Length: 254
Image (cartoon, rainbow, N blue to C red; front, side):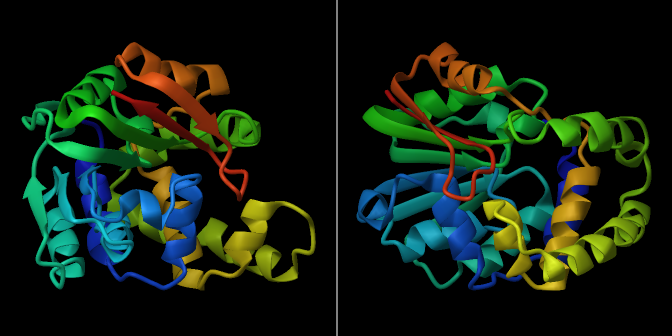
């Protein structure tokens, strides 16, 4: 895995779950909804501070196992889902998943595009779901984010991913404050920017910060994103542009 320590810093600092996060979860897992999670045994691979686990449980998951590799992420996730007796959080690498034919649904949201070996991670997730089970990932899309790959990605790759993470957190304000002011005045039709405009400043800042810290960040075309699941052995693969037109949601069946 790459950058788990840097994300651990983020998920300790930004560990509170806000009501707005449910809209994000809906976007990331669409077209799946509460009925698809109700009563199901769910795996959340790379759970961060546990917000996606939280909403899967809120939607009625009958059991949930979540994991992350950094201890700070694990502790934040444990705190956030402690009220759900059917949930457990583990410290584990996505490359070392040892469950076999265990889960009805496996999700990994915002994780696979940060890995040095996404193929191995998806193979392990594939092994963890039951025959007929569902695997869902949400990843960055190249389409619509060309400007990030041209302008932001070189800065992340060559500068900010190498700086102390606390310094990057401070420097991020020089981007997040202008973005926040722009969002408050924005009246255009971009669905993602409209969504961001409804977020609190700390959330917008955390998104900017999140973009600048990882060692690896892949922006995949539709074909590349779909191929990730096909290469892992999944069938009946479907790929969707989320309702906010940001990223790719890819779903396959074992």
